Image (cartoon, rainbow, N blue to C red):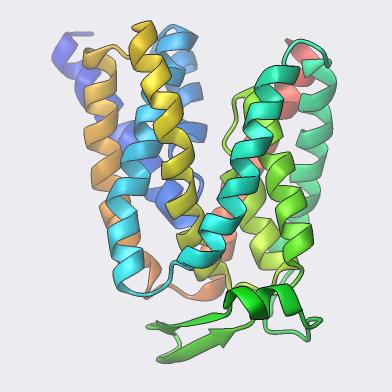
Length: 278
């Protein structure tokens, strides 16, 4: 395979990763890393470094569109991100003290359950939810115009304490296992906090960019970011993210939900494989 052919294939994979990542709110890394390592023979450290760059690219490319369409709940995102950052620090400090294999299996099972639950969910977070004085006080409730429904969709955020706890756990897992927190925070916001799936996806995209930027700086300093790998990945992911961001607003709610279920299933298989066979 010539260098040009290799670059074109990596870019094509990255477009798909960016498209699905922006629709699901998890970044493209969950597809980029296994594709680069298993299909293209890239060293895992360089694949992860390219993936971190891809996550920043996904967030940067999609966030502006989501903010402009008012799908991103910035207040909620910043609140949950503080808990995620604290969890990531705790995870980094605790790394090596806990069995990674056991954690991979545990969170793989959790993702399987979440994927099953989301695939059977039909209403879009508009069921009766308990009042939350904390959310009222912080003005976390929001609305956005849904192009597929052709109407303004208002929602009230609930269970913020649970949201902070799970966001801390998501950061902890991210620090321990090197996986993105978005895979946990999208179902958290959608299933537990009453946030519609599109708003949850958009808000997750906003958050993962903040988290990944710090990690990207560390990988740059270590020299793990190889330009000939990271460049086609970043270009492809940005292109895919732009397409995904334009598609999301007009997509049917169940289609967005199923896109996330696919990504979650892929993540679950990866975690279970690492826990059972590596």
